Amino acid sequence: MSNGQQLGCALDAIDAANRQDPNVEVVDDQSLPREYAYSLHMTRWLLALEAEPSDRMQIACRAQHIERWIRPRTDYPEGRKGYYQWRQDCGKFHGERAAQIMADCGFPEQECQRVATILTKRELRQDPDTQLLEDVACMVFLERYFADFYEEKTDYDKDKWLRIVRRTWGKMTPRGHEAALQLAGSMPAHLQALLQEALSE
Image (cartoon, rainbow, N blue to C red):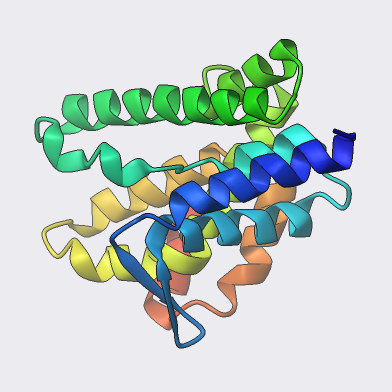
């Protein structure tokens, strides 16, 4: 296979896997499997932040949540410790699945393992590719899921929301910050106010 064929093979396989998600997200009045929809959001924001992303970043962003429904949050204990264990296990699983798909599509072993490492996010802040993945994921959260998450977590007080916003902001690069500030103008007024307050201190 050529490089382009390898990339197409990997993206098609990731899409096929994510289309098996039994959960649904509505996008532009169309019902899509949730993790498939998420992967498309990730690709769209990758292209918005990086004009010519590498093959490995296209694959990593598409596979960010590959088959996540197989490892639901409810399988882990409540609380912060259980949450972080779930996140770590998911990152390892997504990385392994992406690496397996890439190997099946003819990518070199080194490149397969590179994507697996990116998806674990172990090298966040040290590795530009991992940091780009985090910027993309934060933008997808802010655009697509922040408002619903806010409505869902009725037990969270204002201080906790401020911590969440600041923690999200702290994971992003200046490039991500610029994109987030541009996006903020389209957010509901209460989320705009929350963002403004979180960043003013």
